[in-house]
Image (tube, rainbow over all chains, first blue to last red; front, side, top):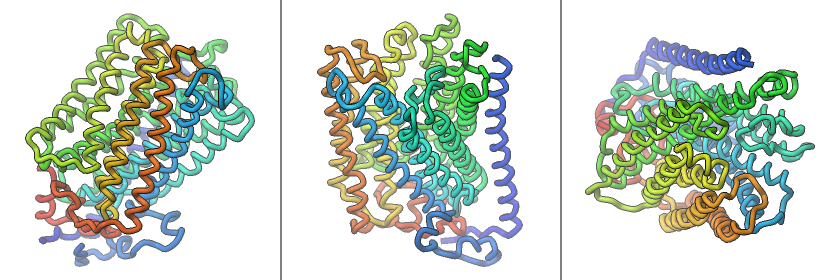
Length: 45
Length: 537
């Protein structure tokens, strides 16, 4: 079995940063839906 | 598993140890397999708690009149049964399967955010302690249905704010779990595992996770507003204060309909794993399956008002929601026909996972057809809030979601543990479940068509016979589920050893790992040869 070469520390750090960025973005999207639906209801009520 | 530390030992610091011992292993767990196991055990416990509530409901409905429980408690049971089964059993079971399988299937060492993963799980026991605790406070548990429609839900006792807080916690757990799934799939795939050669289970979970991220906050928003209406004098949903109770229904079902697909899409993914394995053929129409899943998810956002035709809406609205609902049958049909085409001229064998998958195929389709009947406005006016609706969604969720989970557990159990379950007992479990689930739910179609309303503890005497049949089916189904933990306990005690590829036709990166897999699988990414053998195309 030819193993794929392990990632370099730099690649690992880049992947961690990218994962963190994606997670924060998705968290903001979720927060956006929460706030948007309450704001819409405030506007209607 | 070869573990080649060449350039970057630092990167593997977290992977060089085995599991911690004792309670620390579970409380501080960051390993995806441990967290997956905890989710699955939690889901199993909640399945029996929710099942016990269903037994109380069916025992009360065994004959007309009030026999066992008072009407308020009966309504609490219907409400709590739904909340426990949806948020406590089915969703955690899917998250458990996702935790176990996604990293192994995409060649990742773990989930992308392991500590968040731990947090997502450990929120759940607190949430459900709070929710089940409402049974013991003045005023009792929520009794207005899982849909929590105001103004009825606002009349709850001390249990109301507890239930609302519990729902917020469950939502937070689901959102955090989903973020983890998306981040893992988008960032942690091994080189060579592309988006369009991931296993269908991973694809279906990716789409499910996006649905969760978009819809759980909407439910959270709706229940937050219920809370402020109850305690802080707002009038979002109170007509007397200028609010609109129907607006709650719109918001709730904007969450609620995609939620149905959140419960069923991972089952579609599992079917797409199991059917090719036991047909010994590649999946027919892989790309079409991916696009069909995405189409179902998209359509699930634009059909919500078919749950509330009877509140009244313009003709154009009725037509739009009828047609958009019917359109869902197109991608769903693509999936059903592709599974059938996968089996066509295959070398089929009928082990327990395949039996559950086939039952899923037939019985979920029945649930789909009754859904089409409910999409027709004039017919829905007749069926709305009757047992026909109960039969419809239970056909989708029991032989659909629950059988999907059972199929997945039987399929991957030999991989997780390195041991085979008792096939004879597995088949007993399947046949008893498949027979009793139909005895339980099929008569409810007749009851609904004859006009029996849902969520009532008493009924007119003409409904007696089919209610008795349905209740007998429920007791049989409930008892047959006790086989499941027994089968697992029995084979943990010493089942036959399983090889790396537990099933002859199994295909995927997880089957390239030993059974059981190492505590830290894919600490180094899989080789090109392994990927070529393991991925779909």
